[in-house]
Length: 131
Image (cartoon, rainbow, N blue to C red; front, side):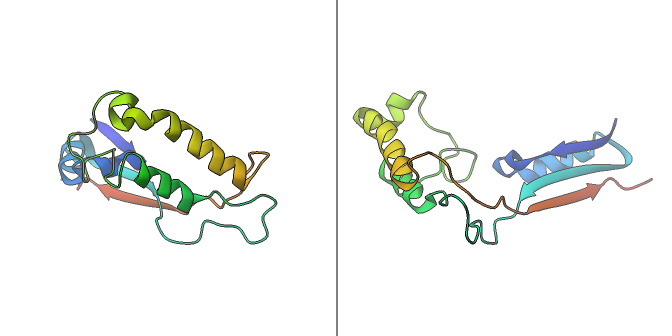
């Protein structure tokens, strides 16, 4: 039996209800399941930063252009994952995919420095009931 079970970001890739039920069953009475995640709202740019912001729109464009708009991680839209190896995912475009992000980043910030505000943090706690 455990007093606390701690999960971070990847919990959203799992069957959360099933994981929560299983983990709660391993906790001692009054024990807690704690999930730490980043908040998906709020601006991540900084007013007047010393360096340019990360070019997220350009990165999303590259991801959509090369491997496509279907998420490649977790269990959301691609439950069976992706084929093994980069060559299977990118095919003959692998070299371009490796060069294009470098070109995008260097064009945005030649010294390779970027500034952004980290996302806020959300903490969710669920406790096992006392008998």
